[in-house]
Image 1 (spheres, each protein chain N blue to C red):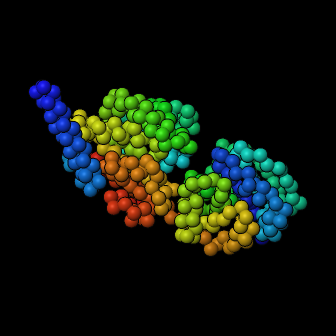
Image 2 (image 1 turned 60 degrees about the horizontal axis):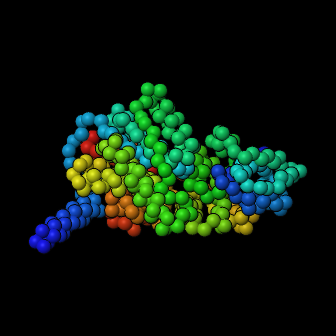
Image 3 (image 1 turned 135 degrees about the vertical axis):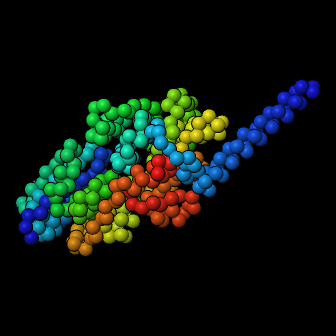
Amino acid sequence: MMETQLIIEVLILLILVIVTRVLYLIHKITTGYSRKSEIKRTTPCKILICIGSGGHTTEMLQLIKNINFAKYKPRYYTMAKTDKTSHDKVVNFEKAKEGISSNYTIIEVPRSREVHQSYITSVITTLYSTLYSLPIVLGIMPDVIICNGPGSCVPICVVSFILKCMFIKDIRIVFIESYCRVQTFSLTGKILTYLADNFLVQWPDLKNKLKRAEYIGQLM
Amino acid sequence: MGSKHLFVTVGTTKFEKLISALSDEKILDILAKLGYTSIQFQTGNGHFKKVSHQLIDIKYNKYFEDFQNEIKQSDLVISHAGAGTCLEVLKTGKPLIVVINEDLMDNHQIELAKHLSQKEYLYYCTCDTLKDILTKDLNLLKAYPLADANIFSNYLDQCMGFQ
């Protein structure tokens, strides 16, 4: 009898600790305390770039076009298995920037949510892709994740948030809301409001709707 | 008037209504009056009826490998509301009319077209109001300002502690 009570008490304590840690991190993130790295960096950082599809891919490559590849290496790109166009775009992008000796890897993941999927089935597929993302993020252990939607980046961000909660690795998440979002946020944006250390929007109107969002000027 | 070239693009999906609206005899007459002597359609996957006009040379292609080049060669682009296409045309500095596909529900790209038209970078309309928009003065449109290409990389460097 005593023993079960002890186990229950320890469990409750554990849950409380976890909840506090999660809430603390979300508070830190949403108030903008984690916007900038506290330490100066001198070594290159491992970067994971979540490639969406179609317009998202084009936007992402436009964003990272001028990042210094000497500082951001090695580079990992995740993209949907079926997305041949994005695959080609990334290969051409790397080739144009670094030539054949480029230091990058493409990782293919299952799609997390089809465009017209119902909410219930998308919860299941999201759970599935979260499990799928676990070995990817653990295998890479990136320093920073960059994503601009759509849904496929959410599981990866969730996993890296969990790692952050567990003090395993402080992975910075940078989210950029899509250029075509002028008045409303995407579903990915709504979720990543709580997880992304840096949350950029491309239109001032959108910044006015979410206090924590940042508008740093015209990106496209 | 000269001989002007119009490029019509529907992107990677299909937008049959736009192609048929621009294939209308009356619309083609208006275009001829405005000085257009050739039209290039990029049709995507949709079904459509090929038409001809005595004053306008009309060509159809499903897709273009060098999309940028087609934009460069045109005097006006009429396009679907895809953000990527809009941006590409605006950056090239060509006048742009965006036609919204009303059949698509929950289409947030309309938001973008409206916003960009408020800023006077482009005109936007539906297939039904295309006729009225065509006669608008394209010289009134403002040039799209080019973004600072390093803005994001500088931001990222700051976040990561490189600066």
